[in-house]
Length: 558
Image (cartoon, rainbow, N blue to C red; front, side, top):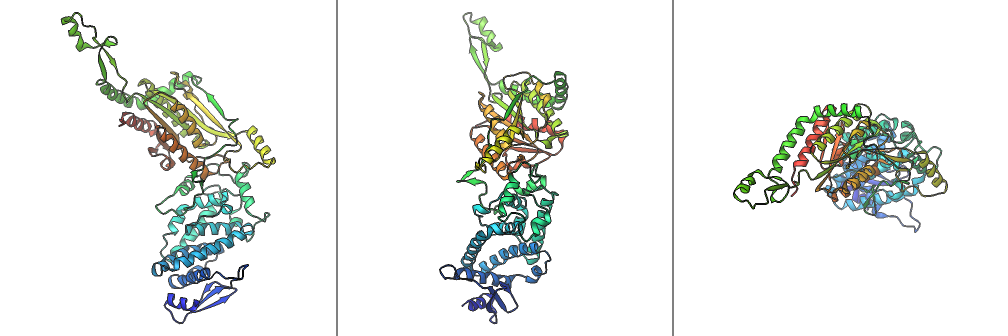
């Protein structure tokens, strides 16, 4: 039966099918299937066996197998074969749609077998399987979803997207080489520090797991331990873009960031040690005056222009014929002709354009050190000074996180007690939140104290700033976030930090708060904020930030 199927699918009537312990493989006129042992009930899955035959037929018809077999690296060869199998099977499905069901059965059987062997697999074999899962749009089970594998696959997602479009064996081989090259760079720290502690060669080429028979526990402990040198401190532009790459048919379709259908939030072990420091009015007065002078030099023309537009708008928003208020000059004539006239006053009505509260939230991560934080300080001064001149409510906040000895001690205590800490994504770092200028204060001297911290847990900080803003009585509430990259903490999983940020942005937007993301030399804000700008030249930051805020302030809400 299998021989007949092979002859029909290949269109070559001399093709034979045989079984061999060294299978599966494709020869000139023979397809060799692996010997399959029956299950516990003594049965053989004939559908999966037919799927294996269909796969080998697809290789025989549409692939140049010699280009893959001559590859020196076993890892590259396996990945290239996985890419090629996906490509040739799609071609077979176009010609014989019924083959899709049988190959699907083969994939299910392979998944079960891999799951049974998972604890004994080397890390590189787990990664190859993860890549294969992604190519076939298959969701890995809970056992397979280790932080190291998820982070690695995310960092090569744009390359996977390219390989899915492979049109030939040569392109499949090139895609495999590119993937292996990227993974080696990640492990070596050339592109980004990986979420596992392993040498590049050992991680990809070791035949068995070293020191830990179940393999997975080492990956998890390395990814969770804040002391591990493997922790991703600040993803580089290349890896960040790779992790966020998306398309109408993304290479990774499983919900690694969802729990019970809801976005996974970054949950701290405790908020007991989080610190909020109010620096309102406590900065150096002379430093603030110098900062304000620089700020006005940057934005004075823009401030004057916005003031003129707002005043012109306000001239049409007066409530006349009032018994008190300011004199309405056109009504003065009535006092002459009507001695009993008692309402020559007018009252200015608050217009929508000025009935707004604005918060500027500044990323204080270590990557902001140097010119970035200096420009962020100037930008904050420019916006705050202009908004105060224009009678808008405004507040300036900063955020970062830093390792807390007390929190680490609590974490180690819980760990020793056997508490399940997997649901926490901030275990040893406390939030370091700073208020540079409160809404209720007219003293912005604290802006001169803006400086850098360590990490940037964007989602939690955004929620904190939004809650403060939501408490203000205003017709409109605008929250501007100034950042230079993706959210990151020393002990937080990057995928969870990003899904957390997206979930919080959606929630804040539902409150009616208008969000603006301003990216400093980094386009990460484009991945999160619907309204965003990216500043490519640092010296343009104050002007661009003020311009986008002005446009938003002048926008009328229907």
